[in-house]
Image 1 (cartoon, rainbow, N blue to C red):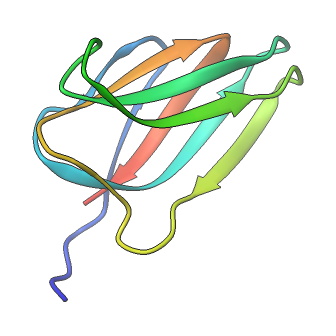
Image 2 (tube, helix red, strand yellow):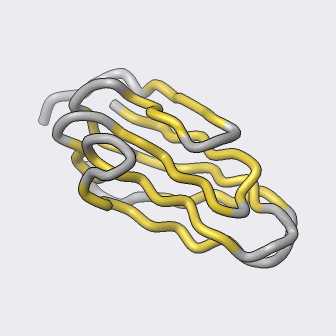
Amino acid sequence: MIQTDVKSAATTSSAELVPSRTRIKGVVVTASSSAGTVVLSDGGSSGTTKLTINTPAVAGIFNVIIPGEGVLFESTVYATLTNASAVTVFYG
């Protein structure tokens, strides 16, 4: 097993978070008071959806733990936020 340093990237709007191949190891979402989603796509806003996180209709912060080696993104990590205030991804 190869160990890599874990880094983080955050955004408060839809944006590219990581510009290269990587594995997402965990996510922190700040939900708004309306139900919504955070969609992480591989290859930009119209790329392949790799992870969809449904947010509750309650404002607050919650963690998403990803087991094993994480979710592999082959080219880039793009986050689309709908009724979510912020997202932070941990990758490496």
